[in-house]
Figure: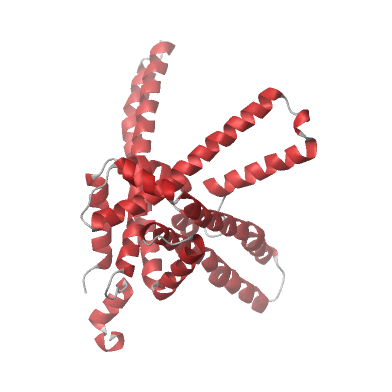
Length: 324
């Protein structure tokens, strides 16, 4: 059995390396966050992501409008909020479309084709609404489910004076039922997005097919999420170390020349500017890489032939009779 993950991760890396136009999509797709990694890193305290926080904020703003009335707000205040709304809308369109563009890039690469930047963006924009629907379902249900159900249960368990049997039962329900449901929803949404772009599914069909694909290949999916967790941690540790390595000389030089505040702030600003550029480029690369990995996993799982998890391959090697 060939190494499934070696092929996927290498293919995704080479795609990013040989197609720098994908960095634009990677930057905006990273705005949506690396949801699977966030959940696995911090199971009991998942804050709002970009989509859910925007939805929550704008619901609150419109609620204030409906109660107070537009007349109670100044013209400048209304213009400011309108400008913020337009900016948020543009960012959401770019983020969702970039996710679709990266998924499309994966199928183009798999077929030996290389489309231009405009083609990828066009595909992402054409599939914007079903992709948005899937992301909203993932963001809202996942986030609000944790906030309204999981977090209170965890707090109740921590402060509860109930018997140890009840404590054990509630803990098992939270950590082995409720939280896995949130993680599963993220996986189903990820596969659903690929069905929208690569199989031209509508929202309902994409979600249903995404669930079926996860149900059949749940072990491979979970394994990939865990591998990606370690890859993400390792990558951002290196990126942080690089930022410190780049910025420290500017800080030391600025302190030596601190007798002149203008020179100090000039050197300090250059260091900050370089740090921001490196961080954006690094985030863009990983954003593209992360989304391409999931898209390539989808392609492998939907291709002809059986895909085996790492656990299955190890078991097959050492206990072949149990894994026929």
